[in-house]
Length: 634
Image (cartoon, rainbow, N blue to C red):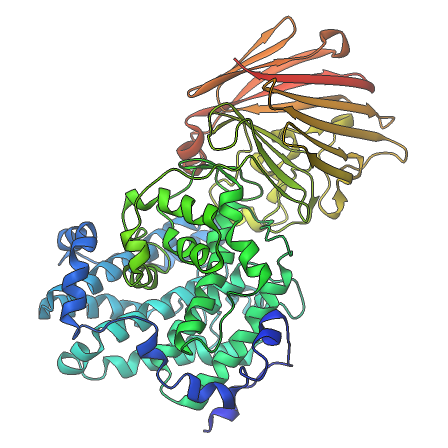
């Protein structure tokens, strides 16, 4: 069968990448450009002994863990683990075993490449064989066996191309690239099997189906670059037919262009900080790959939007380990991220703030943790001499940043330091990716650590992405620092939005103003104006709420505190592990105060960030009026 029989191209799409690379992205032109792609992308094989011996000191922790795991029983996901998602909503048991096995394979590949030992080759081959024999590389929450076939076990002959499938394809592709010569000598036929599985599970389904995440019939999200970055690696290393290879890369460029088109010109990520790494950073990795694979013929460093995206982490950074998050973000950064990526892109585009923030993390080591995309990220970091030579330093801590496209702003009391107060404000709408009902949210950090908080994402279950999503407390507006007019939660969808939004900052005072009535199902003519002012010299944040609500129900404003709350005669004191705030208002303008705690023990993802409990302060209000809440460091 010829490649054209199985590898169709979707209807042509030209975005910013296509325009910048005009005349170089069709399959015929790409074919010669990609002829030496596998050698150009900087992934050495086991035969490059000098490279691996030089890398060994930087891999010491991973090699030690590999030795501890060697010869132990392999993690093996079972059918009952898969079925947990359908039976009780739990996806963590299956994914935990799947991820643990993948991490062990990664460490085994590193050990085999560094040592060259045959027993390590066999160890890795055992792990790969378990992966190749799996019925599905898809994660159970995404598999379409249920939606398309009304069955629970996955269909081998109808594979779902999701994040997990892309990750596994890239993992076996890196294994083939790095250990391929050893496999040829010791296990002839293993590499053919790897190629067969990736072609059947990934490359052919990619062309055969207009997957939702491509972005043709609905708006795409972080799935697009995450999958495509892995697809590019798998295609480069495993597709030996140059026509198939060039067709797949040509399609991937068009589809990546669709994702870039969804990003606003100012570089904002409406999914929040964590999804920078799980989305925009994946796009940067794909662009890195294309630039290297084509020897610079496809270079996106001059695209203004791409440069704006690079700066996002620095714009929402609070202090080491902490970030201002929205949507399904996590305020405390998880395991070490691939900071070499923003370090390199910052250098390429002249973004010194991004370079400084990335370098601040260099002290945690040269390479990120063994997680998604680990092997590619290891190679990328170790092959970057400027990153390897970078010295840890202090981030820039810019005084202010603002993203009008998503109505998000961050203002520090003093530029160049995290000390004092930091204010984060969000307007936006409730149809954002990985949305929370958080229009009007106000976050206040003390010395760079949030005290008036956005809880961020809980542990993902079946409920997280179902019609019941907003039954989960961290997603609800009454567990954000938002008004609750007439006792209502905010509505769902893009129509529920802040209007009349404005943000200005003269360097001394920042001010954000927005009309929040449109975020709720209120009667026509009801109004809620929130104005948030930060006077840096006075070290005072003022939240001025003005409302007129005719819709019946109990009205209040809510503050979620990562610590304890003690009501006072003129407001309340909030005290956390790392600092304290006083909140003051005119008690004559409120009708009551209620304090309650939420034990987070049930959710390890939340306790990892906020410890055992958080406190909600609810200030009850009349149907109309004005309340000025003045916030100072205590």
